[in-house]
Length: 183
Picture 1 (cartoon, rainbow, N blue to C red):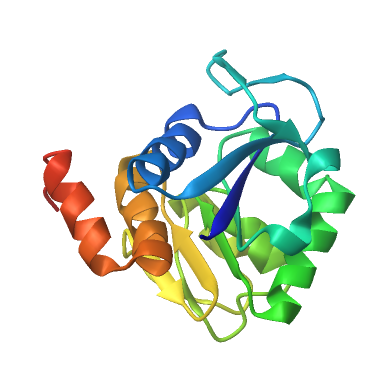
Picture 2: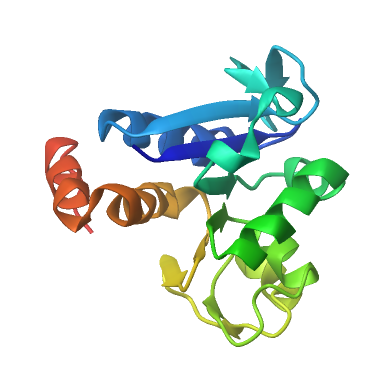
């Protein structure tokens, strides 16, 4: 079974993060909510504190198949400032493992040169940060080992894309039907 990890930094966008966790768990995927500051709870950009599964110091990245970064401010900046997490993002890219980001968080991939020649999307105000990417306005892009999405309004699409990669398109379609989701 695949192991996914979604990273929470103070000021994350609650809907983007929790939609992914909820839908991945409904799909039967193993996903850990990980605090970048190793605290038991992390508070989002709208004051909602969520209990974490573990801190980043407790993650065995060799067992993780996908790093997921939610957006939000200042959450995205706090994710990017975490040296340990950024080292793992770079390692995942070099190993061809899946990385995913939504809203402002794809800008992190742009800053790190990961998006060169790839189709990508993000929150409109951050499109200039997708350095080297073929920027589009799709709700979600899967380009090689990189998944990007635009924002809170595309959180379900983002989660379903991740599910399609790790559990198959049939499972993603079944789940979309089950939650009465229509594109």
